[in-house]
Length: 254
Image (cartoon, rainbow, N blue to C red; front, side, top):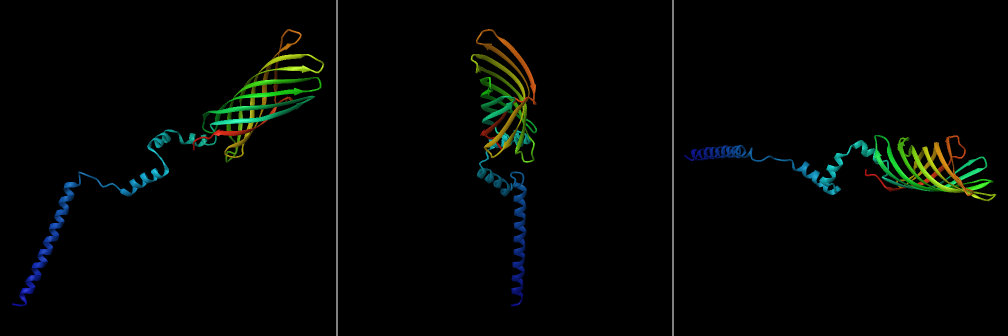
């Protein structure tokens, strides 16, 4: 009798343990079947990592929406060109007995960005003159330019510039023998040049007219009025070559 009781007790405990495991398995299956359509399990790591990184970088939903609306290629090109530029400089030219000089300033505004170029509009003012053995000329000129800027080097250090200039000037010729002739001048010119990037804020700009049509209206002190039209090309010796130091007033968003 002593040997039968322990064996009976062991068999009873084994049956109870098996029934308990079977009951627990049925409970888990029942919970899963009843709740699988009511909620879904979302990956915490991926979702919260994105939220945390956006918060650390200061990226808002408004920024992401506005950024995705712009074409990526346009953004890359725009990053090369500042929105606004301020140019200050001077120019000089020689021809025969004449010496031409000028001081000038211009404000440039980026009007459009294309696949590999940018269009700038500029308003400028120029004060200059001519000196020779017979007379001295001084004038004040207002200039409007529409210029294309195109990178021509691998890392965009140099831009090729080309476009049109429309200018209106007024001044006077003062003769060494006495007397003065006032004049007004209207100029339409084809402009080329280069912009050399020095730093993120500074660059050098070199420009000249390669083809120009000039209409002068002269009014001598003795009275009367006469006009003179002249068209010349790049080989003209009295062609000013201007050099400017340029400041980036507002850089493009990168």
